[in-house]
Length: 62
Length: 300
Image 1 (cartoon, rainbow over the protein chains, first blue to last red):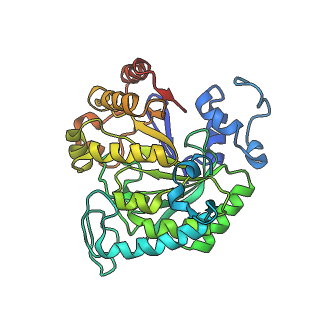
Image 2: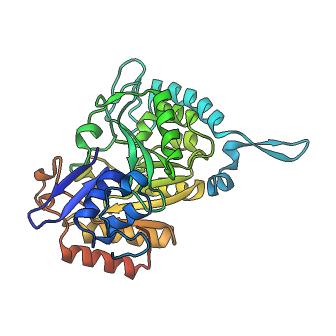
Image 3: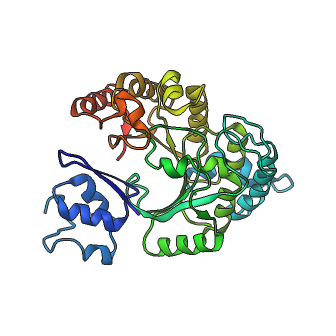
């Protein structure tokens, strides 16, 4: 289980982040490099299915 | 096992004087043997630096309120830790010897009865499955795992010998705890939260914090790989982060440091005026400039 805190300004804080939740958060904001690094490197095939079709693992910015 | 073997040979290697040969004792065997010692230590518990001396086997409770058996409140693959460790299969034991007002798992960390009974076979199977799916490490954490050393060592005794093990700790353990842990973990992932004892006493109800943490960090840097974490707290950049940064630069130069900005005002933060909010952009900027000032070896 992951826990999220969404602030009024739109910032999202997360802890106990699972690969699945990381993929969801990254899909919501693909430009966030911090979260993206945790998805690209480590997501398994099932998790990667959750990512947008435009996702490019080889680039930091799709 | 990397550097853990190099620097802690006395605990896992036996010397055969006639042949002058070193023989590696399997980690699982060492952990199993030490878990028995650790269980015995609960008769007069000195596992953390509070040194309560209570008999946990007889049902007495010290400051952590933990009994003789540990409970697990989470066991899952996670990716929120350091990049070099993730994905990690994280096993979180309930209960802690500190009382950090801002603890993100306060309900479980302040309550050693939270969660489920530890099932060694189940945890081992989960860990093996996680490694097979690509997990890079297995992390034992809490709460604070030091207060549950007997169970933590039992867990190690059923984990794959070759797995990269991470000990995630508040660095408030005792010398006795360090003896029992020596050489078993590949990485110590240790918090250094407060840069002065007044803040530690006020926010985590812990005396003599800095001396204890510094002793543990200095020891861990020799025993294994060490990554030090500092969670930036709003209003505590100069009083906490700067002295932490200064000490690490001076005493553990080059040590890996993860400076974390993700403070959120949860659990009992509302009791403290400065903890009502997250870290501001200006505070984060100042914190990074302090890190640069001390030329710290920052990791993400």
